[in-house]
Image (cartoon, rainbow over all chains, first blue to last red):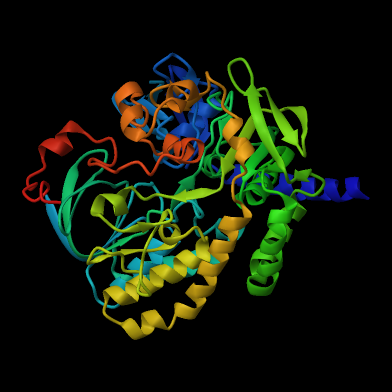
Length: 102
Length: 430
């Protein structure tokens, strides 16, 4: 019984995920030189996480990735198109954008 | 460049949108300012006309957005307030320029952030806030196939677990630090006063059907090589390892008080003290939403509306909303008690656990300090890029330090913005 309900919920969930993916237009950018393709409307912070790259290295050299997702923690500050200290979570990906870990 | 408005609203979440729409529709010249690329704040992050159905109270967004569009309000997106150099003046900057804005009425709707508590491994990539994970997924992060542990405290845990499951993640468990006994009176009172919120909760539970939801449980540490690979969770007194790709961990919310503090608003028990018209102790400055007590979307909409009517001088309309607001404030207070933090969480960080992530300052260095002054002098704690926004909430809980001061600029800013500052004459007198 429980597994049947879970399967039904999973099917509804999968359908909604697919629906979202079909509607999306693609954007191409690079993260630390690596080409990445994301859906339009994706933030730079999300793109960097999906590329498996750290957003920055801490003062003692730890690799860091986004924490708060809402412009507060500054862990996703990166160099975007040559401009340093941009908050990746407050910035949408654009075609041809070059993003570097900081 | 200097702009002038009758009303400036900071923050375009529910409270800010309502305040701006009401004031502008009544004929005031209004500017609604927000740092994010889109409207909606955190609760409605990434919302659009086509996706509103999948958001909490998405229909309300559509209606308020229509009112805002029709009101003639100017909307400035991608603008950050960095300073309030003199009375009734803000300094703001975007990625390309800085401006000054004069106002007669200022309505602050800057919302809340999560409280983060440090534990070993919390700086590993893949460890995010609870709201953090939700915000990232709403911003396009692909959750499909990810194994996620959701932990910490607050009503957000279940809502986010449901949201992540819906986005294709496998939720390995939801771990709430509060006890069941702590929660019972809250749930019972919600049943009587806010049944809608309980129904919301029940729906979230349905989306996470079969996922363990445990009280009395918290993450003790996260481990992994280049990113989080497993977490150790204390579940009702027993410790267990759970493999995961992401850990979403946050301990309820704290208001973003930097701007009210900078402006000199009186703060009481961690919230801005306001009167029945949402006015703070500083003349011309109103505060709405999470700033006056963590209460969620509907409280923010109400308070925004009240502040909007107050700004246009229609006190009768503003006060007609008072009884609903009072109920929402009572709900907020009960929620605060229900998710009160347990003392065991103070023992999570070990000597080498980083507390200040910007400057990599460890628990050992900070535990020896008496307060912010000493900590800053000795370690630069709270002096990095986030200016103590993350370690501040932790230090308050771990060490009992008072709130960190807010000094201009309240956000990392460009030298060009500082150089353009023209009018600082009465800064010294404040």
